[in-house]
Each structure stands twice: as structure tokens, then as C-alpha cells.
Amino acid sequence: MARLGGVETTAARDVWHDLGGGWWRLTVPDPYRGANVYLLVDHGIYLVDAGHGSPEALAFLVRALQARGISPGSLAGVIYTHPHVDHMGGGVLLAEQWPQVKHLAHRETVEIARDYPGWVERTHRCVPDALAGHYPELAGELTSPATRVWAESYYLAPGSLEVVPLADGQEISLGRTRLVVLYTPGHQEKHITLYCPQRRAVITGDLLIGASTSIQLFTGGNVGQYYRSLDRMRRVKADMFYPGHGHPRPLGPALDLAEKTVHGQEEQIRQILSAGPLTAAQVAGKMFPRLPPAPGILLTLGLVLSHLTHLVEEGAVKVEEREGIRYYCLQPHWDGGGAG
Ligand SMILES: [Zn+2]
Ligand SMILES: [Zn+2]
Image (tube, rainbow, N blue to C red; front, side, top):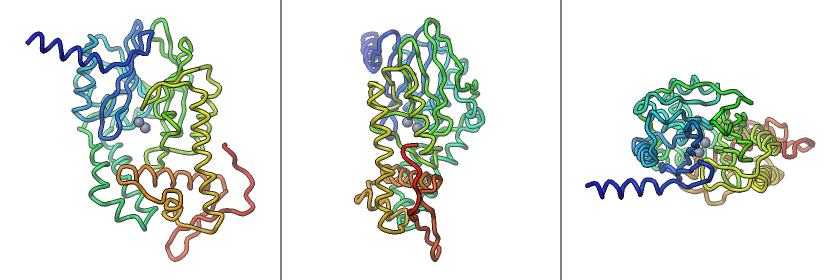
């Protein structure tokens, strides 16, 4: 028995990646790709994000914490990069099991966290229907049972979270080190990045996760804000970033790649529209001749729509409605834009 328990504890400890200096990374499994939780051990012990809000994901997190000797009494708090279910969902469930733990997030998430399942319902679970409204030609596919499985898989047990509000520029002392809160919307409108000057590192949530992030209107994304947040990250004195998904990497090249990718997507849409007005589904079909199955189709069509919306906001594209069908038309004399 004891031996078996010992083996289990060792295995649960092994899931943590040592980042040095008392920081650790854990990938909590979820129905999609798994999300990172960071454990910061200083005079106080903090987590950044808490993984997905399913009972299985929470059990995984709690087991991993216990394997590091962390108990409800020793965990000072959980700081959230943004309220998406794969980052804050686990915290809503953790709050029920470990009620003494503090939860900190951008101040505009206070209301969201109080009615968290309601917010998830209004954002994530409505995505197939909301997209179907913009892509009527693809409505059948978007609202098919197979596609809905993904949105439904994000179902959360009811719960609510009392959040300590954080503001841009605020400092959180961990003991020897401190974190500076930077408001960085784009992937999501309440998104923060945590800058640690002592480590010259940033914990970027989903602002920066690879070649680029997914920018999704219906879950709070905005392409214009995303560009501005990337610009802001360039002014931060950091060498490394710790993403919400995937491995830590050097910051500078990742910022270049993210900007190039997002800008390239916008350029491609302009090129496609230069041949004449098209519906959103026609634009998506030219960009992605083979649309992936769910959940990829939701992310792909969401990204295209986010770009079209930004191009309309910028004045580069206008919307014309003909016989009830929405067409996107390139504005021939438009000369603004760039990567801003
Ligand atoms: Zn996210
Ligand atoms: Zn995420």
C-alpha cells in the first residue's frame, strides 16, 4: 500500500517541469490541447491559471499539487491570465474544494467570475450558433451534433469565484520576486500578462502561444487590440515567455512571428477581396480550401471573421448586403493600415 502510494506520488511529481528558481510548469489535460499552470514558489506560493474546469482536470491539478506538498493552507493564491475555461475553469472548481485560497484576475473579471457558468454559456457554448449567423452557407456544418460536441465538452459544474481585482501596472509581491500586471487584450478582452523583472520573463497566457494565438470575436478577441498588446510586449525588458499552451521560449522571435502571422493573414484577406466582393464563407474557403473538422472549423472561421471585422473597423473593407446576403468589399482608395 505504502509503496503503491509512493509510486503514485512520484508519478504525480514527475508531471511538473522545473523552470528553475522555484518556478514550475504543469500541463493540465482538457478536451482540446491541455493548458499550462505555473507554480511560483517564493515566500508565498502562487499558481498562475488553474487549467480546465472539468472534474478530471481538477483532480489532476490537485494530485499534482499534493505531490509537491502543497495543501490548501500553503497556497496563497491563484492568478488568472484571462477567464477562458481552460485557464479559469479549474479555479472555479478548486474554490469549492480549497475555499481558503485567494483568486486574483483583471478587475473586469469580477462580475464574470461571480456567474462563471453563465458567462461560459454566453460565450463559449454559443459559438457554433453565433458563427452560423455569419456563415449561413456553413450553418449546417457549424451546428451539427459533431461540431457541438466541442462546445458542449466545455460544460462546467456550477460554481462561482470571488476575485481580487487587479489593475494594469499593479505589483504582486511573491517574496523575493514580484510580478507586474500588464493589461494585454487581443486574444481576450480581460487578458493580463504577468511580468517578472527579476527573471526577465513574462507569463503570457494566450496572448503569445506559438506562431500566433487564436483571435476569436465571440470569446472576447479583437485583432486591433492584439496588435497593440504585441507592441506593448516589445517594450517589456524580458527575454523569455511562459505561454498558456506549449513550452517556454525566447520572447523577441515569438513576437516577430506572431505579428508576421497575423499581419500575413490580413494581407491574404485583402488579396482575396481584391478580385471582388465575397461572403465570409467564400473568403474562408479561399484561405483554407479544406476546412478542418471541429473544433478546428470553429477556430478557423472565428479567426477569419475576427480579421474581417478588424478590416471593416479600419475602413479597409466595407459590408454590403444584397438580397439578405452579407458581402465584404475591399475599399479601393483605402490607404491606412499596416500592422497597427
Ligand atoms: Zn484563451
Ligand atoms: Zn488557452
